[in-house]
Length: 188
Image (cartoon, rainbow, N blue to C red; front, side, top):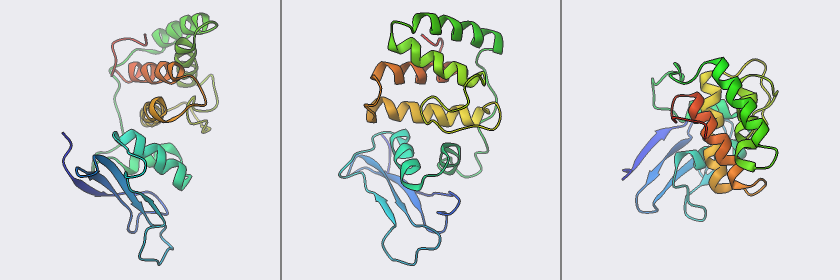
């Protein structure tokens, strides 16, 4: 069970007063976002968790990214505990194993949405696709561990919130990204 908490949201342009947290009474994560140049008492954006519940931090993360139009890596970083540092390390597969699984997923993905999502995520990890498979955000270099984790957060949220692709596609992308980060035993 998640306990009530409130944390600052250190997102550039929004860090002066913005907070996020969890409200046990509502059973939801929430965020109150003030633009740094906003002088109003009420938040510029209030994701209360009442009209739309956010049962996972990843769901709130996606809503904050949309509301602020900030890059997902910056939103991910802003939601990490203070002094957590960037997502580093990787106990997942090496590049050759990622490539082998990406090619397998691409072959199987011609007829199924789950492997197609996995193939697109793995192609992005290998920097064979210029934009994040879920977010569509462009990268200027191969994705870092932190960028991969932010894209995974977006995939997790998409499984529950988006309908523009089949749910299996998002699950395939999510699982493949978890596997790359060493958080799943297999991309399948």
